[in-house]
Structures are given as structure tokens and as C-alpha cells.
Amino acid sequence: MDNVFSGLSLIIVIGAAVALLMRTINQPLIIGHILTGIIVGPALFHVAKSPDTLALFSDLGIALLLFIIGLGLNPQIVKEVSKTAAYVGVIQVVVITVLGWLLGSALGLSNTAAAILGASLAFSSTIIILKMLSDKHEQARLYGKIAISVSLVQDMIAIALVVITSASHGKNVAIGSALGLAIKGSLIGVAIYWVSSRLLPQFQKLISGSQEFLFLFAIAWGLGSAALFQKIGLSSEIGALLAGICLAPQPYAQEISSRLRPLRDFFVIVFFIALGANLNLSDIGPMLPVIMVSAVIAIVAKPLIAMAVMGYLGYTKRTSFKASVALAQVSEFSIVLVLLAHQRGLIDSSLVTAITFIALTSIAASSYLIIFSDRIFRVFEGFLDIFERKSVHAETGPPRNYEMILFGYQKGGHEFVKVFRQLTKDFVVIDYDPEIIDVLEQRKIHHIYGDATDVELLEEANVDKAKLIVSTLTDPQATWFLLNYLKRKHSDAVVIAEADSPKQAGKLYDEGASYVILPHFIGGEKVSAFVKKSGLNKSEFKRIREQHIRYLKKQHGVEQRKIRRKKLGHTVVHNLASLSRAKA
Image (cartoon, rainbow, N blue to C red; front, side, top):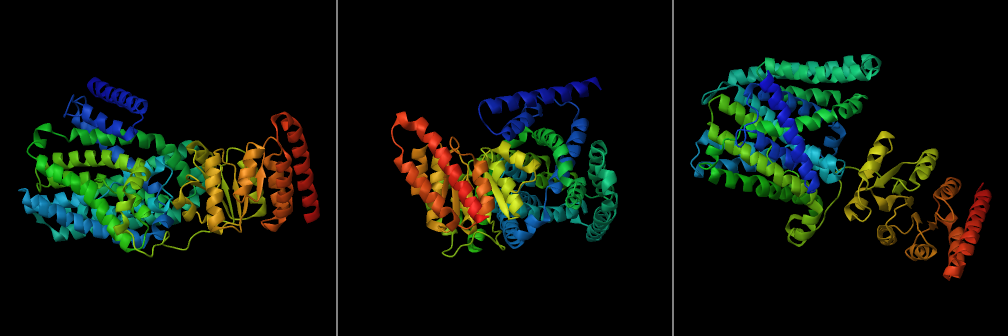
């Protein structure tokens, strides 16, 4: 018992130290988790000397991870891009499986081992995709929705393969056994869905009334469902994922997900430790040709296939590229599949080591690809024209049009949000600060994470359809870019911008701003009140805009700055008040 406690404690300490190193050198923490798994596993120092205990923690960790993933899966996300996800997911799985089988056979693997190799390379990791996109706050972007949905389609295919493999005995597959498992799994799945959709809503107040009970209930629900599936001979991971998906529509699902997030982060480390524990360095040498070819398939061929399909379906090369590189890794279900195949005697331990090594390598590579996808795209943009048709579209379903859009929340944006809500208009806040995004989530304000200079973001948010656009951005270059874009795409919109000086305000007026806020002279609360009175009609801003421009043109000389500020403040407040009274 002491050895188990000491071993687990040392693993956590090593994990924290490696994570600190990654933070210090500004590298993704997920790379640190992979390194921790290799360091504590038998490949290097073999810190975890109790394999049974580590296996137990690994099973619990993967089950909880998939349960939390299920909680975050909004069925609406899949529905919006379901056709694309189905095409990309199925075609990618079929092509990669066949390619992996052909290359595996050419490298001396048996037909069964080559087929399992190909299948394991075909699936992408929902855990990694969701985590990396969540860290970038881009899971709700079009490419993020596609990548997540494709991985879910592939998870369903992987689950079917896990069921078939579970019914295998040696080299034979018992069809009756596979059908029996499928029927049992379906019955339990239907029962879980019925309880979650019919019974649990009746006890909503009881479940969500206590935070402690809600946490305990969530753990019991996720692990209990996983245990049921394991009991009938299926993978516990399937039950955990299904439990999360069935609980996702409940109003307290977000609260559960938030409370389980620390556990998720901890078990991500456990997941990679478990992968590291499956590595045997002595098997890597003989399997090196298989590993190298497979890594190229997972990291290069998979994205190319996905880009080709998405390009054919009419997506822009940017959307296709970013969604495709997010799929460039091996799935956690692939590890479940190969371990199960090894238990059934279908493959030997050397292939388990090879696929585990490929999984770790591809996850590390895809982490960098996702983080730096915008920079990489700019480098290769000129070579990606072959993946884009002449006629492209940015959305697969009816786009959402916002009447009002606010860029930047921290610097007075809350005043405009207050007015937007009072006007009962459809609005969205766009911000690039992760901390502000967290605040918006807590306050239940509809938002999009992104940069105002990202043309793809502006197109996805349908900025060219908005009636009122307010920018409280502190970066003048970003504001000028936004105004220039709107001048070309949507000159009829009312655009309110913010400047730090009269000179900067004049430049913003030159770029087409309807009105410019000068915080030193007049705050955003006065302008927001005017918006409330005047509505979204651009003509209402014309007279006050012209008065403001004339006054700014008269201002010159540093020594007059104090007088100018005082007078400008008085003039703007007076004009706003006059126009508001006239409107009233």
C-alpha cells in the first residue's frame, strides 16, 4: 500500500514539474503530459510499479474523460454540420483503413494485424480535439464544429468495431455473440436515454438543489453507466460517453461539466501515463518502418483526405485546412481497440507498442498544428487552391444574423450589453481575451471568441448583416481594419468606434465611423443611452456625427488640449441630449 501511495504521489509531482517546465518555455501543457507518461512508464524510469493500480486509475480516467466529453456535446452542433461530418468521417475511415492495411501488409504484417493497424489510424481523438479547441475557445467556430462532429462520427464507427472485436475469439468472430452484445448494448442505451429524458427532469430541483449532491450524482451516473456496459462485455468507455451525451440536454449539465473540469485535467495526465505504460522500447526498433509509415498516414494523409472531401463539398480552403489539421491524430478508441484485440489474441504486443507510440507522436504533432493553424495556413495558403472550388460557402445551414455586434467587452462594453438587452435585439459579443470569455460565459452573454482582424470570423458572424456595430477595442489597428472591412462590405451599418485622442477620432471618421467615442470627453454610457433613444437608424447619427467632425477639425496645438477637452465634452453631451429629446 505504501508503495502504491508513494508511486502515485511521485507521478503527480513529476507531472507538475514537467508541466511547469512547459509553461516556462511556453509550450502546450499536453506535450508535458505526454512526456510525463513516457518518463514514469516502463520505457524510462518505471515509477508506477503497481500495474494493476495504474490500470484501475487509467480505466477510471478514460471513463470520466469520455463522460465529460459527452456532457459537452450539444446535439445542435452535430445537426448543423451532420452531412459534412458523415461524408468526411466515413470516407476518411474507409480510405485510411484500406491504405493502412495495404502498407501494413507490404511491411510484413498479417492481414488481421494490418487491418487493425489501418482502422486504428483512421480514428481521430475527440478528447484532444475538444481540449485543444476549448483552450483556443474555437469549438463553436465553423471549422471547430466540423472537426468535433467528424470525430463523433468516427467514434460511432469505432464503437461498432469494439463490439465486433469483443465478440472475437482468436482469429474468428462469433456473429451471434456480436449481435447479442449489440442488442444488449442497445437495450441498456435506450434505458439510459429514457431515464435521462423522462425521469431525471422530474427530479431536477432535487438533483441541482445541492452542489455536493450534484457532483456525487454526476460521478455515479457516469461511472454507473460505464460499469453496466462493462458488465455485459462491452467497453466501459462506450457507456461513459453515452451517459454524458444523454445528460447533456439537462439544464445542470454545464454546472456538472464545470465541477468535473479539474478531474478532467487530472485524468488527461493519467490517460497519457497509461499510454506510456504500454510502451516497450525493445519493440520499437523492429516496428520502426511501420511506425514511420503510420505516422505519415495519421499526420499527413488524414488531413489531405479530409481537405479533399470538404473542398468538394464547397468549403473554403481556410475552413477545410483548420478542420482537417485538427483531425491529425490517433484516437483514444484506437488504444481501446488494439488493447482489446491483443487480449483476444488478434495481434501481438509489438503492434500495441507501435500504435501507442504513433498515438503519442500524432497527438503531440496535432497539438502544435491546432495551436498554430492560422500561421501554418498563411504559409501554405497559395498551395491549397486545389482544395477549394470556385463556388464556396462558409455555412452548411441557415446562418445566424445578429442585429447588433459588440467588439470588445472590457472597456465599457457592459453598458452597451445592458442597452442591447433592453432593446430586446439579437446581439453577440466578440472578444479575444480568454478571461473575458469566461466572464461572458458566467453572465450567460452570447459571445464568440476571436480576433476582429480575422476575415473568416467576420464572415461567420455575418457582420455584413448587422444594423449596429460597436467597437470598444483598444487596438487602433484592429479598429481601422474593422471599419475598412465594413466600408467595403456593409456601408449601411451604424458603426460606433472608440478613440483615445481627437486625432485618432478624425482618422476613424475618415474610415467611415458613424460616431466616435472619446472616453476622456464622453463615456460609453452616454452613447449607449443615445443608441437606446435613436434606435438603429443610421440617419439619426448623421447630424451629431457632422457636428462632432466640425468641432474636431477646429482643435489644434498641445497648449489648447485642456480647453478643447472641456469644450468638446460639453458640446457632445449637449448634442446627444438635444437629439435624444428630439427623438423622444
